[in-house]
Each structure stands twice: as structure tokens, then as C-alpha cells.
Length: 151
Image (cartoon, rainbow, N blue to C red; front, top):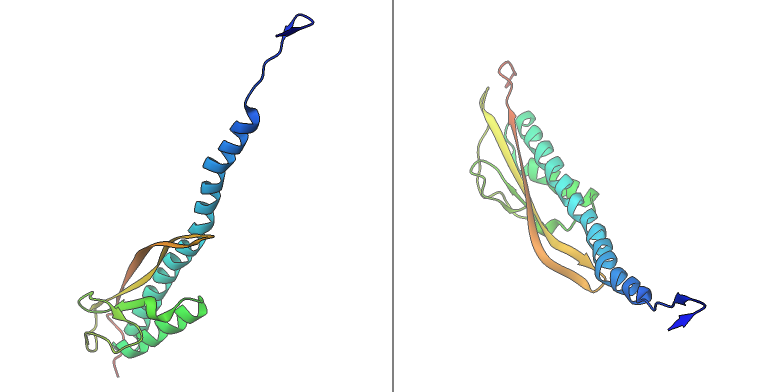
């Protein structure tokens, strides 16, 4: 069809706009919004492992005290304590709400103390609920000072 020598073209721009927003932008927005809690859990695991390892070095290997510290950090990060696990000597993690699975004993001068912290949580958060589950783990190793007094 021609009008005044110009050909009128009918396009599908409104349809392409709706399809582009619905198929590309909305999923990307949901993905970016769900990365926040995932990164929060990653930061928590790193901080908790580092603080617990340092506390074990300073408190002569007290696993109960380190687990209490991890519980407190989880509470301060508004995380569910029953989803947090802690491991010490052998790396096998157990719930932070129960007694430690392994007792390492007091570390000697120059020993390495390793703490592993795990946290379970949803992989993605959508307006329709949680999708999947992911476990994030972080470990930290701290050395007992060679010239540290033990008395």
C-alpha cells in the first residue's frame, strides 16, 4: 500500500518489546536480586571461619567457644542457625547447635588450626519462592604463634 509515494510498513515493535522485556529483562532482574543473599552467605562463611580459627588459637583450642562465636556471627547476619555447620580438625562439619563432632585438643606452638564453616540456603529467590539449595563452605587456617606463652 502506498500513500503519497511512500510505502507504509507495519512492524511488530510492540510485540518485540513485550517479548524482550518478558524473556530477557525480567529473568535477569530476578537473577541479580537473588545474588545478594548468596553473596551474604559467602561473606558470612569467610568471616565466621576466620574469626573461629583465630579464637581457637587464642583460647587454646576451645571448640565450644569457637562454635558459640560462629552462632553469634550467624545471628548478627540474620541467618538461620540450624543451617550453619562447623568443622575443626578433620574437616567434617556438624551443626553449630550441637556439640562438636571432633575434639582437637589444645594446639601446640607452631601448629596450624583449621576451621571449616558451611551454610545451606536457597540457590535462587524468586517471587514464587525459593529454587534449589546450595551449600557454601569456607575454611580458614591460623597458626599458633611460635613464641606465644601457654601459661
